[in-house]
Length: 118
Ligand SMILES: Nc1ncnc2c1ncn2[C@@H]1O[C@H](COP(=O)(O)OP(=O)(O)OP(=O)(O)O)[C@@H](O)[C@H]1O
Image (cartoon, rainbow, N blue to C red; front, side, top):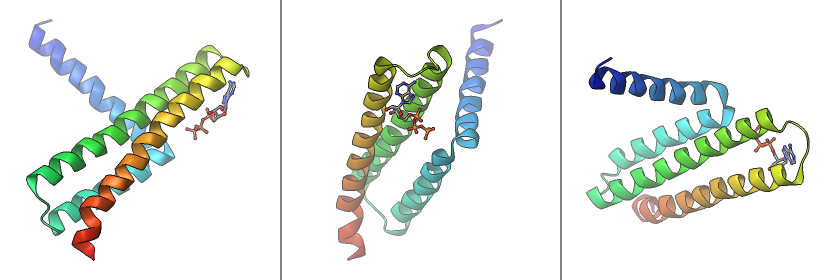
């Protein structure tokens, strides 16, 4: 298989992974809806290029942390389905990463949009 074909195949797997995540995880649908609303608000209020860059970065941050957290949960449930304090630590820290991303996203969203709305 040529290099280009291999890369295209990997790209297809990655897209399938995103679709699988959105389909299987109820909170992914919430992220999806929130992303649509925030992007629509960005167009509506004509935010600046810099604001777009920060907004897109923070959207990516939330999606990436949420996806990695979900992957980690699935891995742990697969390899260690029974209760274990170490599993608790791993899952709690991963959930903490999502929380940090969500708090930062809310703060940045407020900094960008509150002055435009008020
Ligand atoms: N096998 C386990 N051993 C120890 N603690 C666990 C275990 N599974 C879950 N927990 C605890 O329960 C919390 C929630 O875990 P869970 O896997 O249900 O995540 P969740 O955030 O509720 O995921 P989702 O909503 O995506 O199902 C973890 O943060 C951890 O504190």
